[in-house]
Amino acid sequence: MLYNWPGSNLVPSFITYFLSFIVLLIGSITDLKTREVPDWVNYGLILSGIGINLLFSAIYSNPSFIINSIVGLAIFFGIAYMMFYAGQWGGGDSKMLMGIGAMIGIDVSQKANQFLAAFFINALFAGAVYGLLYSIFLVFKNKEKFWKEFKRIISEKSVVNAKKYLLAIFALLVIAFFLIKLYYIRILMLSFMLVILVAFYLWNFVKAIEKSAMFKLVEPAKLTEGDWIVRDVYVGREYICGPKDLGIEKKQIRKLIKLNRQGKVKKILIKEGIPFVPSFLIAFIATFIFGNPLLWFI
Image: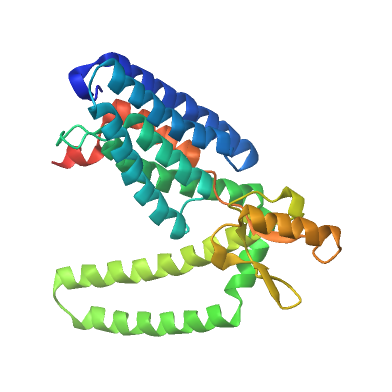
């Protein structure tokens, strides 16, 4: 599927899409291997996107290239910022998205056939399916730890009490089901019961995956910027880092390394996120093949 560029010139289109694909491929490999994407890959994509589009604007005497690049970077920065602080993506995922926005750009004068709009929709679909499949993979990879953790969570007092409330709600819904004669109301009630049941066990399923397969103790020297810290770290009364930081910063890592050398801090419990960059690569390819999935319903 061909997406338009300023002046309908195919050379800039080919170069920017090809470079984006190569960087996504490199990022996917490093993300799967090391659970992180090096800053030089992400920042290189952002700077290259701006630089290449600035060059195209000069070559073709058309400012639309650099304008579209800046608009794409700005819009995807906003999306990435929200997704990062919502805890859905890590820092590497967010920077990669910003780089794609800067490289390909968004043409504000073009009402339809926007590649990045289609790419983002596909990324949401691909991310959901990919996240589910990767979670199932983690369950099978750590099945003994997972089932042990899942049974422990289900037997916790708070979860047991929640199950009692659910049973009470179910009992009321079952009584109402037999009293109500309207067919569509019965369907809604059954759907509601199913959603409650699935949501309850899915929530505990995710918690069990996190604790059995995604929590890891690491030495401060092995921490990387953006790692999610599971518990607050204090030395005396001084706060060093914790979950509220939404990703540890370099200055905090340096401080932890120093404290580790002094024998005041040993290992830090972090949560390893799902490597989401491969889902961006899948979405990128899917956008070329299928376009925007929302247009199928219009």
